[in-house]
Image 1 (tube, rainbow, N blue to C red):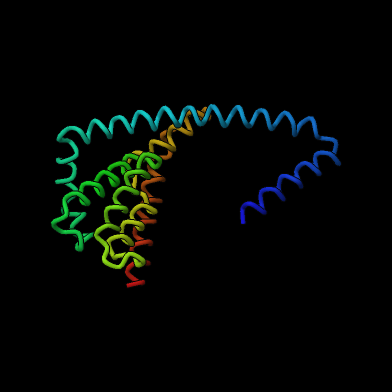
Image 2: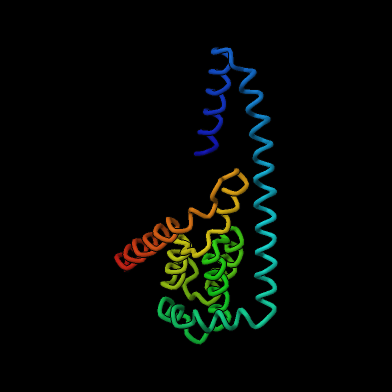
Length: 188
């Protein structure tokens, strides 16, 4: 669908720029946008590399085991099917920690790894288990204490107070988690 929508938008934009005599402005905005996109990408890349490195260090030390122990009661409550599977519990806790720290892009590979491990335990490969569905709900809600990625974006765009987003993010993610978990319960 997007393969159709985006070319239409581009054709309309170029046509409008030609007929309104703003081709020069369109051309300069294209180059400014690419420069801004590269600067933003480099800022985010640095942030992601930093937090991925911290997560790798935490994984190599006992920090992850301690955090997994702290999250274990929550994980056991949310994922009762996964009791006695410490590998998957550790992968889920790593993903939850990355989401809590607001590392959306760093959390994605960890979430995919956890989902892949849950799929290997799944007896019906073409049907999601309850644990897999709950994991999807938690990831889409993305409960965050420190929205690192959003703060980095706001900082790179010159925000005077990039951390002012923290409290609204708490409200939004907690609300999303409640709504999504209630919707999930309604499906079961």
